[in-house]
Length: 388
Ligand SMILES: [Zn+2]
Image 1 (cartoon, rainbow, N blue to C red):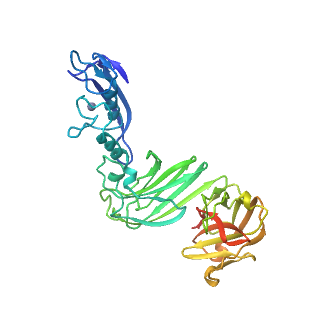
Image 2: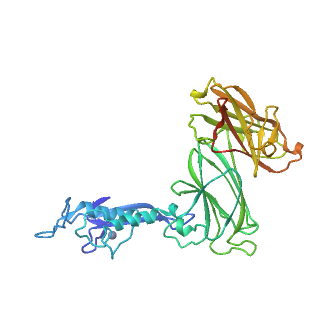
Image 3: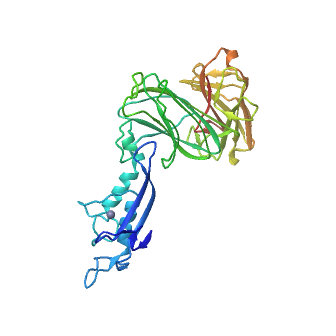
């Protein structure tokens, strides 16, 4: 922002108090983004700072606040409002503060995320579709005329992580994008050659992100439509085991337990969720037990969820279908709980040796106390294993 006698050599128009010049940059989705804004304030005018009616007689003394509020409105993308009282009216007047209309305009311009249902990304396999009434690019990024549908998923990383996304469809021309939480697009696959599928590998630091499944607003080739079903396989890989999210419990009790888990085919050099059926896989978890529960007799539970089926690990190291023992939660280990419990879930699993070529299993570990065996403390994010 500059008090100036001209705008880079160009005279101010008669009666112009200030001018904001915007520079735009094209984005992957939605309208171009403002990448730079410069405000030139006409220094020929007498300017003070005051509230209330504009001082016109005996001489015009302008109010700095309302000039700058108006120009900052332009900086963040607001246009003029002629019909409703607003700081963004084209001419200066007696309004000295932001008006309801100004605030609504900003909320509308920047509130696109509120127009769309945001799901939590599940690592592993997700089946979904793009079709009405899914959100559109227009709804997510206000000011665009792109009416293609999108699904938006959020995810968080607590360390540098390699990510792999594979989107398959026989019907839908798939586009995928990764964005930060302010919807700055970080990576994308918009390729329309070959099949309808899309894939993306990227590495992201810790933070909160969005994964967006999108398509085109016009059909790009006969084989791939702009609505239809898709299957997403989301993979991650990192040098440490993963935090398994916030802790929850069966009966709603509170604990400070921390759950981490990892699946490795390289003896702990790398952890991830996508493996081949010939890989030899070790699956383990660590529970940092709530200090109030340490030293007390308790038990550890290990569950494996395959589609609708829930298996529990028994004390002999076998996974048992809970349908065969309805209503009973049986432990994998009974012991006096220590501060850190290492749980070895499976060692040297080679799926191909069991005749399995493809499977998705979500593992959950938990613990409880003998004096309250129906209460189990566990974690929100399952530990996903995807063999493909
Ligand atoms: Zn203006």
